[in-house]
Length: 128
Image (cartoon, rainbow, N blue to C red; front, side, top):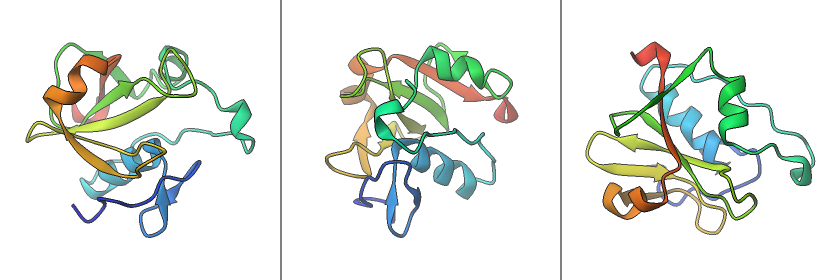
């Protein structure tokens, strides 16, 4: 809960100053004792790759798609930048999804509110 309200920043990776959506994923996994794969982000936000099937395919050695939410699942969500994905969060065991939207920074939302927007669920293979 200490991450609640941490501002969003492009490629943010510091929980004391700002976290992007994937920066939040990395932080949550790190706190749980796991190392999620790093994701290269270009220096120009206009060139940001879509966090969708293309990006997940490039991380196929680390992630696998799952059919139902489970603790620590990566949740792929729509992004205001890209129609086919680009935002992500983490499903937490108590039915909450932690994510970091651009407008609000880190928030925790109930799964039932997030579920209609979900584009995919993925498990870190190290957790399998």
